[in-house]
Image (cartoon, helix red, strand yellow):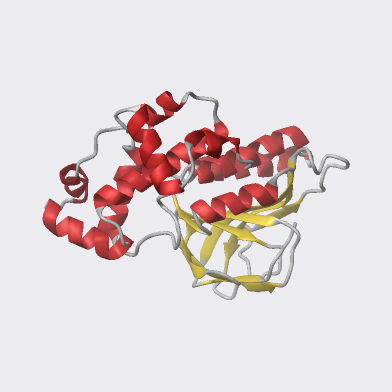
Amino acid sequence: MKLDPQYYEESSVHYYVPQPAGQEKLLYYPVSVGYFDCKPSYGLHRNVFSSYLLLVMMTGSLSYQTRTSRGVARAGQVLLLDCNAPHSYAAQGKCSFTFVHFAGAQSKDLYEEIERTVGNLITMSNPNDLHEAIGEMLQAMNETHHLDAGEASSLIYSMLMKLLSLSGLSGAGESGNPVVDRAIAYIQSHLADHLSVEDIAASAGYSSGYFSHMFAEETGLSPYQFVVKSRVEQAQKLLKTTRLPVQEIAFQCGFNSAANFCYTFRKLTGVSTLEYRKRPL
């Protein structure tokens, strides 16, 4: 589909996919999916577009605003928006991104859980899995002009669950401090390991004393508090998405015992692991 050259380069593509009749409550489905290579003039404002947007930045940056948040998405970051409410975004110079507007199944509930625990702007150490999932949908449309409803639903669900597992890299996306960002990425990839302040500081190339002060200024938490928070948030995802025993979840998230895990979980969330697991998504 050819797009307005005022906003897009020649290579831009965009496909609208019809929703599967009668399956809206059973499957996630793409309302639109595509790749944009944008000129600096690109921007839009919508009052409503009945879907949720998952946008993965490739190059450049894109400012965004909703009723409750605003920020700038940069290369490697993911922007997740509720397009059922007023929102806007605009290129800051040339930029490119892949995206999918989606709806169906438990889109609303899953979006709200991700927004609550991770935020609208999400930093990923490697967003290639999301690009590849969107690419699979685009390739199917390019080759056959058809997208299997079950496969599309599985791809969308998989992308959303990857985002749900990333709390800790949340809120406004990157901290703005590359040292702290490196440390956060290190923490997220070593949650199951023994994590000392010295190890985390060393991963960022600093002494523990200076690093701890810098980290607390940027995040509002000490490195130890951030590790505990991240472990509990990871446990929340496992409690919701797996049937693993509590003891196994405790060890996967870096706690030295199930008892310590259960105590810490209740202290931070206000509920027991059993109560949390029984809550609807």
